[in-house]
Length: 69
Ligand SMILES: [Zn+2]
Image 1 (tube, rainbow, N blue to C red):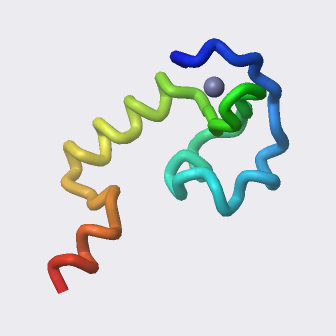
Image 2 (cartoon, helix red, strand yellow):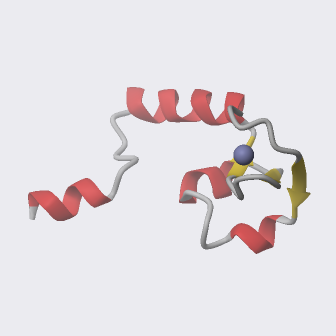
Protein backbone atom coordinates (compact mmCIF):
# COMPACT_ATOMS: atom_id res chain seq x y z
CA UNK A 1 0.00 0.00 0.00
CA UNK A 2 1.04 3.54 -0.77
CA UNK A 3 1.46 5.08 2.67
CA UNK A 4 3.97 2.45 3.79
CA UNK A 5 2.60 2.13 7.31
CA UNK A 6 3.14 -0.96 9.38
CA UNK A 7 0.46 -3.63 9.02
CA UNK A 8 -1.06 -5.48 11.93
CA UNK A 9 -3.17 -8.56 11.43
CA UNK A 10 -6.69 -8.13 12.82
CA UNK A 11 -9.20 -10.82 13.76
CA UNK A 12 -11.84 -11.39 11.12
CA UNK A 13 -14.76 -10.93 13.50
CA UNK A 14 -13.60 -7.39 14.30
CA UNK A 15 -14.04 -6.21 10.70
CA UNK A 16 -17.60 -7.47 10.14
CA UNK A 17 -19.02 -4.00 9.59
CA UNK A 18 -16.00 -2.51 7.86
CA UNK A 19 -14.96 -5.06 5.25
CA UNK A 20 -16.88 -5.19 1.96
CA UNK A 21 -19.30 -8.14 2.20
CA UNK A 22 -17.56 -10.14 -0.52
CA UNK A 23 -14.13 -9.56 0.94
CA UNK A 24 -15.43 -10.66 4.29
CA UNK A 25 -16.93 -13.75 2.76
CA UNK A 26 -13.92 -14.88 0.74
CA UNK A 27 -10.93 -13.64 2.67
CA UNK A 28 -9.70 -15.13 5.91
CA UNK A 29 -6.95 -12.68 6.79
CA UNK A 30 -7.27 -8.97 7.33
CA UNK A 31 -4.71 -6.35 8.27
CA UNK A 32 -4.88 -2.78 9.45
CA UNK A 33 -2.38 -0.11 8.51
CA UNK A 34 -1.00 1.46 11.67
CA UNK A 35 -0.44 4.79 9.96
CA UNK A 36 -3.68 5.52 8.08
CA UNK A 37 -6.00 2.96 9.68
CA UNK A 38 -6.94 1.45 6.34
CA UNK A 39 -8.23 -2.10 6.28
CA UNK A 40 -6.49 -4.53 3.93
CA UNK A 41 -7.04 -8.10 2.83
CA UNK A 42 -5.67 -10.60 0.34
CA UNK A 43 -5.78 -8.45 -2.80
CA UNK A 44 -4.86 -11.10 -5.33
CA UNK A 45 -7.67 -13.42 -4.41
CA UNK A 46 -10.06 -10.52 -4.17
CA UNK A 47 -9.29 -9.35 -7.73
CA UNK A 48 -9.74 -12.84 -9.06
CA UNK A 49 -13.09 -13.11 -7.30
CA UNK A 50 -14.41 -9.76 -8.54
CA UNK A 51 -13.35 -10.64 -12.10
CA UNK A 52 -15.17 -13.93 -11.83
CA UNK A 53 -18.28 -12.23 -10.49
CA UNK A 54 -18.13 -9.59 -13.21
CA UNK A 55 -17.93 -12.34 -15.81
CA UNK A 56 -21.02 -13.89 -14.29
CA UNK A 57 -22.67 -10.47 -14.38
CA UNK A 58 -23.25 -10.46 -10.66
CA UNK A 59 -23.88 -7.06 -9.16
CA UNK A 60 -21.05 -6.23 -6.79
CA UNK A 61 -22.17 -2.69 -6.01
CA UNK A 62 -25.62 -2.86 -4.43
CA UNK A 63 -25.77 0.95 -4.07
CA UNK A 64 -26.29 1.16 -7.83
CA UNK A 65 -29.67 -0.50 -7.41
CA UNK A 66 -30.80 2.31 -5.12
CA UNK A 67 -30.08 4.91 -7.78
CA UNK A 68 -31.99 2.99 -10.43
CA UNK A 69 -35.03 2.88 -8.18
ZN1 LIG B 1 -1.63 3.23 5.44
